[in-house]
Length: 274
Ligand SMILES: [Zn+2]
Image (tube, rainbow, N blue to C red; front, side, top):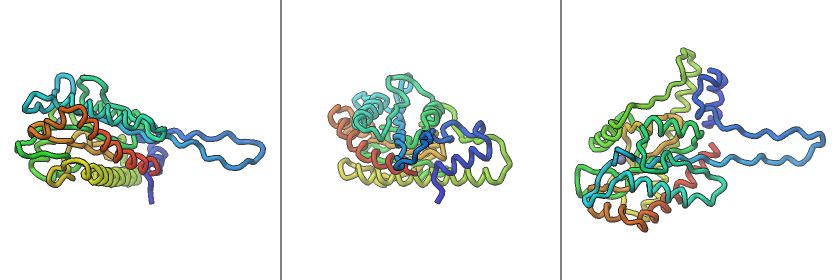
């Protein structure tokens, strides 16, 4: 069984670390100094799992606007800040937000930020508009070239329009081994993304309303980092009056954030082991 870190380090050995993106090089594990007298082996302190929360939209891009004027960019930031707060007491998880105020961050910069932080898990939070006003409830997306349905495809197209596409590029190499390792990293990332989506949706589904077929896939630009487990969560639809009512209420937003944090934590723990 190849773990993510094994694949990444093999890739670094093959291509030279300069050719492997910083995010993919794995975190430095402190090596304990040699002692002249043998003593009982002490486990090195484990690095915390790095979770990136990505509040959708921001600044000049408001995202969806609800029937009573709620802006998606404010809802997504508030939910991400509450998730971070819910996880703040844990020493085994470290949370970073791609933005912490009302600012415009291009999609590639959000992914690059996750790479710089050596992320184990990337969670993008949204609350878009659905073409059908009656559509409501939470759903989650993983990346797929081919969307699960027409709505998913259009949703991803719209999100992606805000700027250019970020692609994984390990540097030009014709070495077959590199191709195999990249493929392994990609497969590992994809499987981990699917598992994360399943766990989050199933766990949160006991507490909140879910959209029909809540586990979806589409070609979102923020999910295009194949080796990094990534999930985009549509917390609800601002085009639906009931969903908007929930999402504009500070207390229900905080509850939703706590339910999400309860699921994100074990997913991050599993990925830290991987
Ligand atoms: Zn959105």
